[in-house]
Length: 141
Ligand code: HEM
Image 1 (cartoon, rainbow, N blue to C red):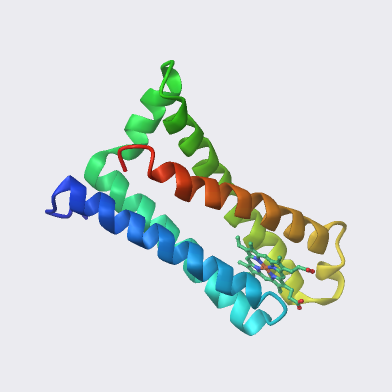
Image 2 (cartoon, rainbow, N blue to C red):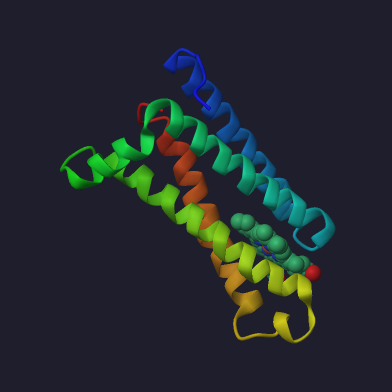
C-alpha cells in the first residue's frame, strides 16, 4: 500500500503513531494485572507498531536502507535505532509466546521461567521502545 504523501507528512504521522503506541503501552502495563485489558491492549500495540513499520517501509524502502546502513560504517544513531527496533519486534514475539502460556494457566503457565521471562522481556522491551522513540527524532524518520 503506497501512500501518495509528502515524505515530511509521512514522517510526522509515523512519529505521532509512535508516540500514541508508547502511551498505549503505558496503559497496557498499568493494566498488567487484568489480562482482559492487558492482553488486547498489548496485541493492538504490536499490530499498530507492525503496521507503522510496514507503511514506512513500503513508502520509503526503510528496511533496504536499514540493511545498507548496517553494512556501512558511520551513521551510528541510525544503526542504534535499527538495533532497538529489531529488539522490540523480538520482544513482542517473546511476550506473545510467554503471555499466551500465562493465559492458558495450569501447567503451561508454570513452565520454567514463563512469568519471570515475561517480566524480564517486558523490561528489555520498555527500554528499547523508549530508545526507539527518542532516536526516531534523530534520524530522517
Ligand atoms: C510487549 C508486550 C507486553 C509487555 C511489555 C507485557 C508486560 C507484562 C507485565 C510487566 C506483566 C506483569 C508480570 C508480573 O508482575 O507477574 C504482565 C502480565 C501478563 N501478561 Fe503481559 N506484556 C506484554 C504482552 C502480553 C501479551 C501479548 C499477552 C498475551 C497474549 C500477555 C499476557 C499476560 C498475562 C496473562 C499476564 C498475567 C496477568 C496476571 O497477573 O494474571 N502479555 N505482562
